[in-house]
Image 1: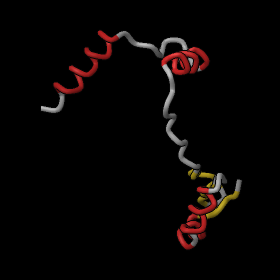
Image 2: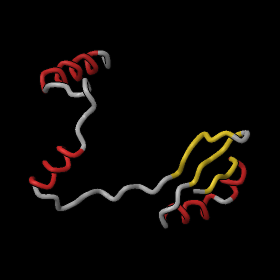
Image 3: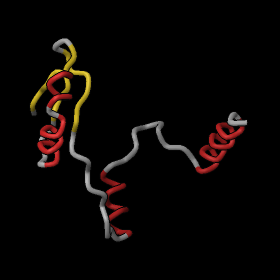
Length: 85
């Protein structure tokens, strides 16, 4: 992982992006402190079977208390949308 101050990053953005595309991570610093990280975008998983997806979900459970029922999600969406008008 490499680190660059904001000015260096701005002046070398194309080179940094090329580095990230090859798998590197770049940290951006302001006054010597890390403020952002540029990382490669994960390629989307394609072609998963239902079984593979179910196994992935089982291996990556939500933290306790993070799950919501469909009814809770619908209620939250309705509340959010009502605030738009």
